[in-house]
Image (cartoon, rainbow, N blue to C red; front, side, top):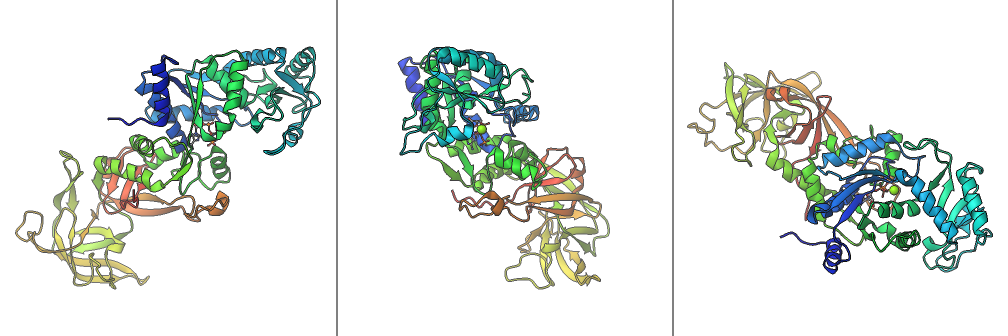
Length: 535
Ligand code: ATP
Ligand code: MG
């Protein structure tokens, strides 16, 4: 049985009481950056309500801040939502309601509930008061309706400079909720909007535009994050004073925070602009496009959103849980393959001709089958799988040691050669007859099983990634927490069947980790094999 979260409890009560007859939600991104995994949580909730109550969920761009917004972001947001598998009912833009919003502002003025203020934004902030002291009323507060109408029209017609005048709600400068102390509804701003162009030189503030957009669209539940809890009285004020009814109801839930990364578009943009990463879709980014490049299956992300549930108070979720979900998905679905990250030549002295062997595609999946690999007289193994000075319990190849080659024979060390650089250049061994699985000597006890690739293996680039931030969550600015090395590139060799792998294909490279083939034909580390998550 599906469990019910607190938002669903509210909705079910309202449905039972007849307060609402259906459920309409919306996902309202501001197109000022790419979506991140926190947005996936919000998407999962809003589209989850649509699914559970057979309702609707719209995609509405809250595009009221033209200086920060762009179509590039609009397009990426749509692509990311589709990637997660969600289908919105309508694609809407707050800017489509600018005319209506202007009319609602006029209504508020006529009703004596809004006034044009001559103070600058700084002065307004200064005069807002504090939690213990009331704010100071603006000298413009008692302007006549006629004068306000004329001035507001002047604002719209470009008679004032940017920031010279604002329209404010006339609520209560002594309200214990500072958001209610005559908040700004409109400002003068000359900026070209990505949809309305230069039609407007005044733009509505979020707190005014958001409730009106929700109301116009017939949203029943306006789900947002906790930082808007203090804005709810203002949301309701706008809703009622513009003449709408009780719906929508604003419900707040806790923002998702993830360890070892940051999750605000503002900060993510800083990483992009300062070239700490290669772009919004860099595989190290917590953006959805970054996670796509990283090779995270969308199903794993949704599973993660499901497992963390819907909370009422903010908390940090271990990135290990997200990785656990990704790993679990890949363990069940990813084909196993052999890739050697740092190749070392292994000569099998007594192997005179190539032998074809089979390697399982996925031991966790029934009927996944196997693929063929050719064991050649010379192969490559991992440099770290041979040691002249092995530590205790070293089960890989060492002088006089024996190991099994994955899917093939047991081999026994004979000799090694040292190169000019003083490092081991090659190792020579002999294979033991009939030691393949099912053979007479297959039972010989060896502890190590090494992955390998044949001499025909082609070169491959592997990109290994680390977390962007260090592990100490102590409130330092993320600039001070940046991990100095977050990308390490290896030139390895790949099993030949991988030559044909399409971009986007995900594999478990045995003993190394899960990797995805990127558009450049390189492999990105998705996640390592070891699960550090302790539940
Ligand atoms: P950011 O601070 O990252 O820019 P935002 O809240 O400004 O985020 P919006 O584009 O306004 O981003 O967000 C669209 C929706 O996604 C909003 O309803 C917002 O509350 C929600 N959302 C944003 N970040 C998170 C998060 N970390 N966890 C859950 N929901 C989030
Ligand atoms: Mg925002």
